[in-house]
Image 1 (cartoon, rainbow, N blue to C red):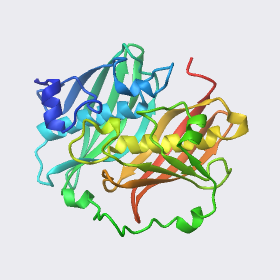
Image 2 (image 1 turned 180 degrees about the horizontal axis):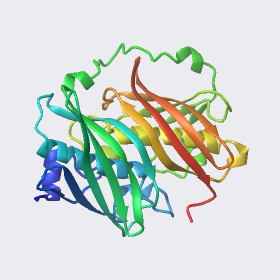
Image 3 (image 1 turned 30 degrees about the vertical axis):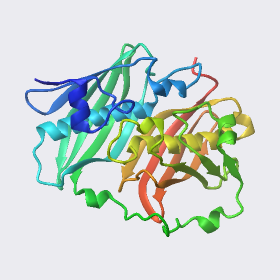
Length: 313
């Protein structure tokens, strides 16, 4: 087996703490699977904000760990004739089953499930800890030409998104209002402003400004905002909307499943990410869909499931 240390993983994957979610990894001799170890410590920055007094590793950081391991396997074991960049294209039926807490050790696994035309590969991925299976699903990665995933950018004169008229006159909630609804705090509060939350049946909108001063991006070196963090931003927008309803006051919204997440292009530092969502909830569980936009270009589609709890305990 080929074994990779943390420093080697950082160099190969192009990321560092706090977004490097693997400490040690190895690829099988057959080159069709990989396994990794992640020791989860209270010293990690994310536990300052997820959640204060009830630390739990965000589900999307489990997704990050699984995607990073799949990317390692792709880069090191699968020769390709496509582009020079490996990107996450899809997350499918990824279910969260057990929490990951400080003091636990995650075992992450990735196995090649299907190779497709266009240099795409689907991986079966899992996270386990002392409690058993924490999460499992599939992720699809692809080799692409970096230009395919880059949006033309300028400092001034950027085109507007197509929801300006729909949002006009709708109620806005600033970050202080969001913190009254959500338990999330920095560095894992990923919504800066919301529009139309608390209005049942209507579409909701959320903004995340992508800046190099974001603590969660301290480990990046390519100006690209990680796709899993976009999923989390959409989940937080939906959570704020649901928790703004009087009957749900004081509850927590917890991920059950990423039914489907498809990404078309990158968002980069300096962009303003717009999330356009809609939620449907019953007494305890619900679904949410969202579109991800940068300027006038849709860069992703999401479908999520969640559950409402009185507390994590």
